[in-house]
Image (cartoon, rainbow, N blue to C red; front, top):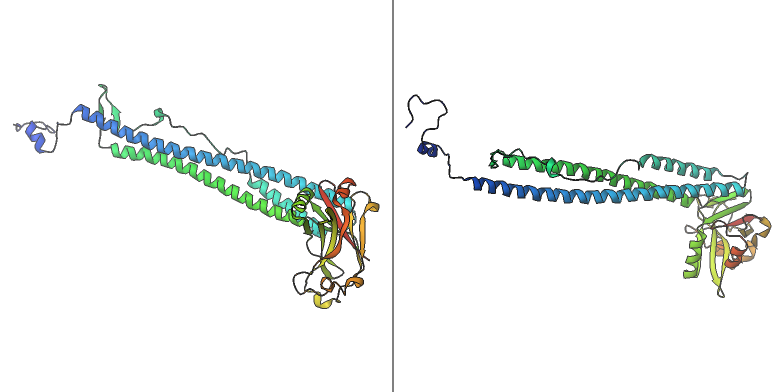
Amino acid sequence: MQSEGAPEGYCGTLQECQSRGYSSDRSSPDVVNGAFEMGKKLDASLEAVTDRLCAIEGQLNSHAEHIGAAKDGVVSITVALKKILEQQERLTAHGDFGTVNDKLLAIVRQIEELASRIDIRKPVATGVTLADEECTVEGITGSESGNAHVGEGDTGAEQSLRCGDKCEAEDVTSQGKDMAKVVLDTSEWMSSIEKLLGEMQPVIRPRNNTFYYHIQNFDDIEKEALAEKEVFRTSSVFVAFGYSVKLGLSIEEYDGVMYLGAFLQICQSSRDSLLKWPFTFPYTVMLVHPTDEKKNAEHCIDVLAYIRACGGCFNKPSASSNSGFGWHTLCKVQAAMKEGFIYENSVTVGVRFL
């Protein structure tokens, strides 16, 4: 029995302790087992987080490879620009290059912007390790006697550990999303630059009545022609004496032999109602030799002689463009390659209005 003078905080007899909700039935092995079970749960949680971090690391490495590819693309674009500038300088020193120069400046700006967005010096993937010594759980402590004590803070401790791992995983996930955005932006900028380069197959006008169309990647065009038996490439629309036209290259097979040709295609424009129809300007189509103008392969088209039979090519366009008209056997492909018409994997065709 508790005496009247018992000190404050004294529990009293065993029966009194039990009546107040305390129990001494929990043995030391039960405590150890409880701690062991909680340790297994924590191990499972850490393993899941580790797997997640490894997956994120793999994604970051993949993004790094894409950034490297983007850098290679910028280098290749720079080389292409250099070739265009060299060709521009070689073909003429007095031509009207306003449009071409504007496109070159636009591409340069695109490349500068792309370079400012790509910073490959930053680490894109970091190894993540979880050392056992770095993990502490406040709710599980070891006593001097080696027994484990499971306190009321165990659940909170486990949640604290998981929260910490989750935050770390979210940080890495955020880095992965940022990297993915960089890759997406890079792809968009690359597509924009490639589009501008596509427009840089220019129609160059070194003289008032002559226009040239320069086509790159000739080996790809030749392969396509061998497979399809005919291939056509046309320039962007340009204006000649008020008429909107395109200049074209053809590679076609005749009697088992592949030939290079050139043609002119009349296009629809807002000025058509002010122009004289049918189109009657005589013109000469040509395959241009890059170093010796005397070697050019040319053929004169007397439009008046063909209007009756091929009026659809020279009448006012009722659609976006008429059928092209030119000469499709200017030079055999093999002869063109042998005689130097194919220069740095490119070829040039031209039209001269008489």
